[in-house]
Amino acid sequence: MGLLEDMIASARSRIRALPAGDPSPRDSDVFADALRGRDRLSVIAEVKRSSPSRGALAPRADAVAQARRYVDAGAAAVSVLTEPTRFGGSLDDLETVANAVSAPVLMKDFVVDPEQVRAGALLGARAVLVLRRLLDASVTGEILDACRTYGVAALFECHHSDEVDDAIARGAPVIGVNNRDLDSLEIDLDRAPRLLERMPADRVAIAESGYLQPAQCAGLVGRCDAVLVGSALMTHDDPGAFIREVTSCT
View 1 (spheres, one colour):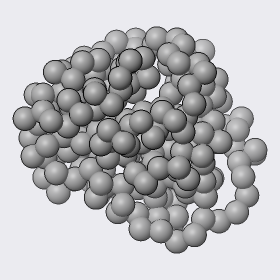
View 2 (view 1 turned 135 degrees about the vertical axis):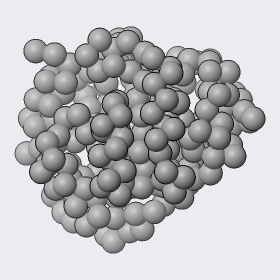
View 3 (view 1 turned 30 degrees about the horizontal axis):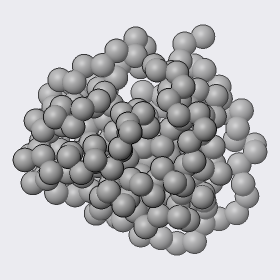
View 4 (view 1 turned 180 degrees about the vertical axis):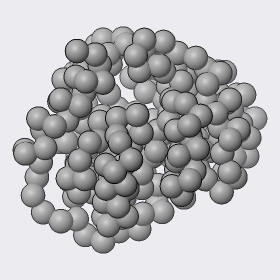
């Protein structure tokens, strides 16, 4: 079984254990508004203890303390992994971080059911990852409908031009391009700049994965609104310095 199949199985196995309840009404534009603007890069700083590509990153990391370091350094948003088996995350991490920081929080998981959107919103997420490759057109529509219902932004993650075109056609306001090939786990840092050229100016464009040095982000200024950085921050002696250097790129 490959990584994606593993992650889909993990997600489905956790649906029955999701917390009950409906979230309070909220403004779904908060996440996008925090990132919007291509004259300078915003940073979505990620909390994850491990990854399939690199293994253990910071297995004992305190999610709240890490998120606070990010926000204090100027991160515009915080991404929290909630997938437990390969990323070391949890819904508890999501809830505690959302309650602890002022920046909007993205729930990063393999979302395959609208119930995950509801639970994420209930626990404080202002956005959820929607990985287009995992979903057929019908389920994609159901998840996007759930995002609208619960006032949560969908970060519509793409890897290929047809997925970007689909996201644009669906009116997705926040679209990310992942530099990582989910089959080989290899990184191509040219992918995001290339595919983001297709993006209308009124969408929030995000470059994701593989940025290990702030200098690698400099070429993204003017091409996208934000960059998502995870592993580099979790293993950096001073993640705040990394964030400040990225946000000062011109």
